Length: 222
Image (cartoon, rainbow, N blue to C red):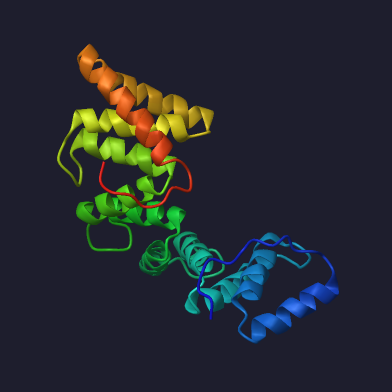
């Protein structure tokens, strides 16, 4: 069985198509299970039903579908369609992260950072997964990597590398409010650097922004 992320296929409102999806999903087709989960979660062609959505995402997740694993984790995290259970959210985010889902990698890192779903924070694991997500092109993770380097949280404090990763995040994010926030954090660090250090850090950041743009492959340490 193909355990890669299910492709997002635009559903229709046709009752025949819905019946076909139900048949395929009951036969174990993970793409159909994923699509049914989305239908019940959004109310596309069916009445919204978070419990039914969680049921189908759970089926696909247990069969190894990475996107469904991430979505199921978010349902457990928020208590949507299932009882709120941070430990289950952690479990499914970890499975999706290990399967290569970048959003799950960032979410998992954040849970480790905050200690959500566990007895205490695990900053070592938070750093590991945040860096993986950053190299895989998530600008939010790139921003968090910069902050962790700045503050020495989960890794050795390094202001030059912190500036570089904040610059990477600022260049890669398309969200204006977030970009402005990142730029402010970056520029505050830049005030503590010499002109030469600043020029080198900007150049390195631009190189990494291109290398670790959205959808980048996992790459060696920066």
